[in-house]
Image (spheres, rainbow over the protein chains, first blue to last red):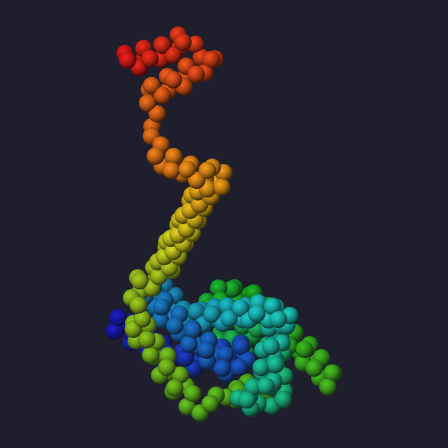
Length: 171
Length: 126
């Protein structure tokens, strides 16, 4: 058990900050990212005894984090649907009202455009653009082929461009 | 467009986050043992079934008792209203009819033959 605790503490040291930024980009607010990170590491601790080393620890940790985040977003989507609103719009609104956002207006618009992407495309775009993971790493984490990821990233880019130009025209 | 530095966190957040996350193992160990935790939903399910059965039993018992009491009370009311007051005393003092009582009753009924009554007496004795 002590050995497991040491491994867990090392995972916290190595991954908590990186995972925070990923989750924060996905959910759009510091508070939600903070709550979700607690759940993610709770899951990592619970699943750690069953980690067999077949996957790299790095991939395994990221996979838990991304799955938990997607589950969180899906739950939010259901809750939003029950209130007849859109979960993606909710994330965009959070970015707009985020007190810890200190970028330019263009960066805010980009973040909002990313929030309006479908979950999977959003995930791929964030992992590639902000987390700077390689396609090979993203493929190992998500279980999607590199080719499909490249296509997904390209479509996401096109949608963002369109969204940004729409936002620019409407201003 | 620079990718980073567009979002920030409260001062000292990551240090505090790391400490908080590292408390997860000890916090989990303070809770119930893993096996018990895993079986807890099944225990809860079994307990709820037992509770439901007990509640059902209690309701049935209560209902049955009250029906019995109602029937007794109705019977007493009937006796008090329909029969004369002495009926209750008669009912209380009434005894099992003897063979002789039965034979006399049957003899009084003209539709039953004497031979049949005699044969019944014969079967009784042998």
